[in-house]
Length: 159
Image (cartoon, rainbow, N blue to C red; front, side):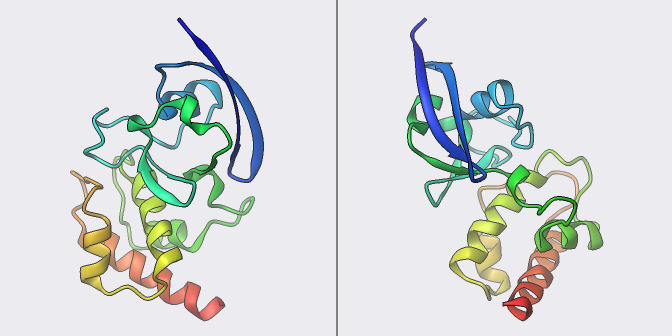
């Protein structure tokens, strides 16, 4: 087993950890940094449950090695809220009852955040396209889409 020392920034905070050179970023986040928001749904990058923003790009953390995080900026669902104040996306997901079991929710929130950072006024087709890599088997997507549209409108008003 080859251990690697990694320094990165996660949700704006400097972190350091040791990880096995074969360990995924998902496992590092969950097991080494106690950030359990990202979930392992498939382990193959197909479901989106483990989505994080890695150096400004939306990625499946199950497909990134922890060692690749050296010097990286990583954003997880844990970094979205401001203390007790939920991010508008989080608040609207709750208000629109756009979640059930919760496995997909962190990945959807991160994907929506990445979308709104690039396009603050997406139409329904753009939202559906952006979320194509996030599978939800409980709620369907209509409530999720409406919640994202509502959050986007609120965020535009605040800007």
